[in-house]
Length: 270
Image 1 (tube, rainbow, N blue to C red):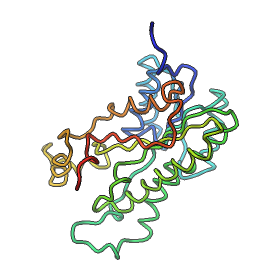
Image 2 (image 1 turned 60 degrees about the vertical axis):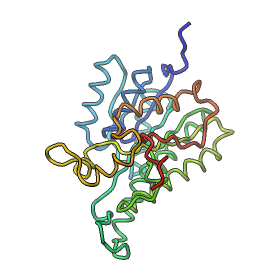
Image 3 (image 1 turned 90 degrees about the vertical axis):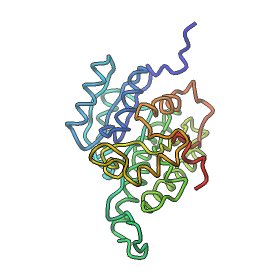
Image 4 (image 1 turned 180 degrees about the vertical axis):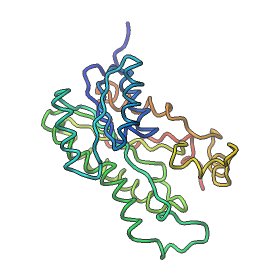
């Protein structure tokens, strides 16, 4: 007998930040299991490309432009999605990132870290990356008495990595907010969990990890050397975790958890 444990055919999934490498990959994974997927982001070209990929594989998706840092923008996007798909039952918050002026080079002085840079990174990852979308879309889930919110945190939120102090602190806050919302909405039928990826090469960190000829930078080599699986992650290796958490049958008793996908990096004492 075929199991429908991971069948998402009756679900509508919103992926905020679905124009990125990791968010887009997760959008494809949800669509492959039958979910109707709404991709939210600022870059329409990349959003439409992701929609085309999903549709070419037989899935259902559409792109809705919105800025995760703008609550009104998110509300308008929600209204458009609900008018098209009726309800939203899965929310993946994949917005986030770092910026150079919030990163500490070797030998730099933490006391000189610009407060403006700290605030920008913290707000992007916590407010835009979890808080605002959870408020905007979570309200409907609570009203319907069902839903799954999946925040994309980071292994850096568990381990205070050198240099990316603002990013690490923000992702730690995402994990904390995840646990708070899980407790708050547990009896309202809404599960809230986080996925913490380890090191996955993408546009933002490629120069940090690889040299121009494709080899490892010093930083990249240190990371791989500290990872028991001795490599970086691939976007598709997040598919199983996001589909599992999205499925009300497969993970019905799972909430308030932080699922780490890092090749064992966080299991090794620094």
